[in-house]
Length: 234
Image (tube, rainbow, N blue to C red; front, side, top):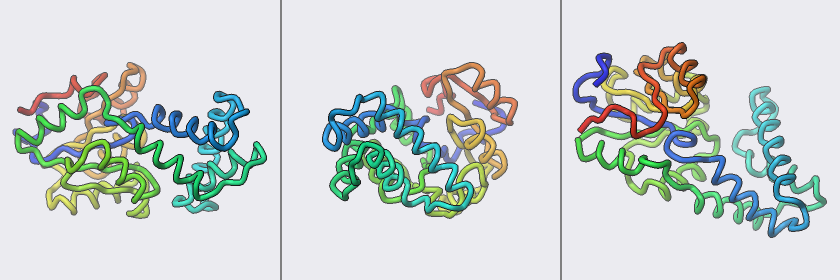
């Protein structure tokens, strides 16, 4: 047990994409499902690369205040398909969303970790940096049905990590102070910095040693390579 946590902690809160599930793998599956229906003659890698470029460009527009974050999928997929002479339809959006939800699966050890924590009486919360609340909640529920007592989507709060506002909203929903638990995430910039700014102990999980070094330098209480390496609380 880490010395900066109560023993036992009253709650643990988690990031979703990149920590408990692999968004990149799910997104690649969903994009290929869309490509095979909308423009099957386009090479898979070319389509994926364009879609990645479009989502990065969309994030830049959101940060500049010139794009509505709730239109992420419509704008990103619409611009991607337009490049190949295809107009995005509601059917396309639904196809991508269903494929994304279906491909959202737990990271190795995630389901077992959450089960053990609940068995030990630790309250569980989730804070995701997603824009679209309903779509992200569907993915969370499909992957971890009825596991989390509190689910906060940063886009619904109106501020994205590392802003401390969504972290504080999560704590308010739990009715607990920051010192009663910890936040677990994979990003030194978004998860660690935001958690520390909100007064939370930050637990970091990432496979790459350089990323773990950045997390510790940024104030993480600990940084491990995989979920199974987190302190056992039961």
